[in-house]
Image 1 (cartoon, one colour):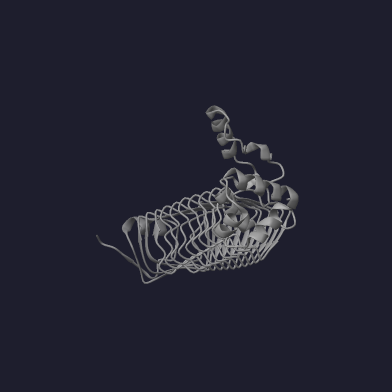
Image 2: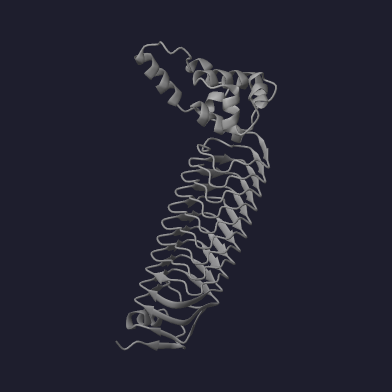
Length: 360
């Protein structure tokens, strides 16, 4: 915890070091000099946003105000040798772990702040604002995060573990290489977010979220369940679905170029105008899905099909193979296929009604 007396002493020491008065400091903070006096006497304490501004003005790291950081790291004597002054300056620049774990954060406004990548583990966060903040390297572990706004924040290279995220806004966030594991994510808005190389590792449940316009290139979903989410206009190139179940989601106009689906299930998902180029399906259960448009260089190997329809589709160089079984559960409506694809379908004893073979 932060002690008001210690904070007050540190504010006074740093203020004197840069030789400004209480009135001058107050003016730069747009507050009264009496408020600064109360801080320095330990009668009250600035909030986290004001502490961040104080750190900039007083030329100290935000962690300087922590009890664990010794105030003698800032010297007020100007006659020390230059070598020592340089050493002290380097000492100031060292970063400490600013741990905000095990707290109850409600209605806090931390928007626009930087260096918030430290720990928030085991905290309850409700109705907080983190808009445009730098939270890269964030660790959320066993957190409950409800109705917070992280829009336009950098949350890249972060870890979100065993947490509940409900009704939060993550619009236009950077979530590159962020790892989600064993978390429940519900009714959140990730529109326009960048999930490049992000991973949804084993045990995630993601439901009722919006990901429209997001970039999932090179990302992966392993051992997780996704239900009733919206992925309209998403780029999902080289995306990997492994051992996961995707149900009731909307992938309208999503780009699945080089995406791989393996050992899981996709059921009752909307795929209108999706791009299928070099996409692969291996040991998948495909249920109640409609494929439209052009599918080129795609493969369906050892998959089971139920109520799967190819409608107004063009299939070029596609591979269908089920070991020792017929290609059942597939219907073709007004489709055209090249000779190679037709050969695979015929060999698998598929129902070839509704298919026209391309002659060139």
